Image 1 (cartoon, rainbow, N blue to C red):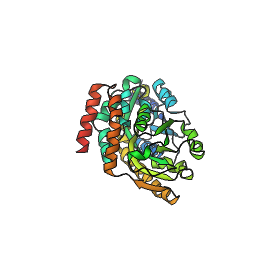
Image 2: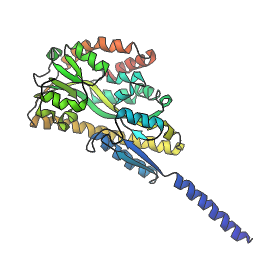
Image 3: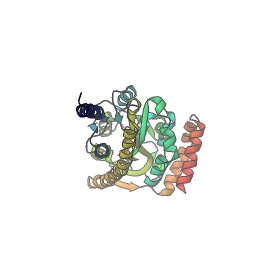
Image 4: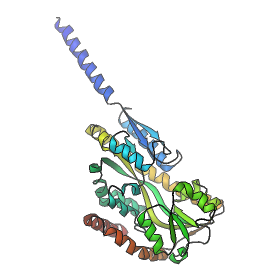
Length: 333
């Protein structure tokens, strides 16, 4: 065989191999979540998708499935663990069932502002929680903003802890939330979110607690008069990847995923916080009476809730609880 021809054939074979490898690297990442397409979580998914496509030369494609299309939080978590779905972004609360120390994120009055929230989650505590996930079949890239939870009701403004006395407040079925509102002498009622509007309308419950944007998008202003900036719990979403999928990625692809997330995080948080501020103005325009809670009254609320958080913390890993308390001391300075 002509040496030149042989060299040409070898070159073509190498090119074919390279093309095959590059074709195999094209991946479609199914990213499911619970929120509508106008929600800041969806905005974060879109920005992450754009950044990842740019970094990978279009090889890593994100396909968004919003609005529970792939199931509820637990169903999507199981799908990631089983390797049939690649990504999701649930509230951190949903992970407490497999790593109970994630309950620390839901402790009331732990952080007083967004800067403290970001410092807690992006720092050693947030990373220590993330480190517990791979053995559960999940990898986390980091945290997005869901926002502070605030109280609404149809009876009176909440300006101090005593204003909760006797109010029937719908809460998510989370033991920390239930015990906290009992400590405020409210009557907490766990109830599926889908039933909440009807319960508020019929006065089966007096009020509820959620981030401002949720209060607006679900039109609670139609059935609630008062909205109070209690800021009692900071809520975050966590961006999860299936470990089975992650382990199939090359180190370069893993790095692209992490970098795309890191760059999208600031954008998502900014979008979420701007949406919350805008929601407050819209709620006022819709006729709701809005009030802030003074730092002094918030401090009183924190003291009332402390026995609750101490009780739950006693059942968590002591090293993680110590890290949580050390980090709170650091970020509150």
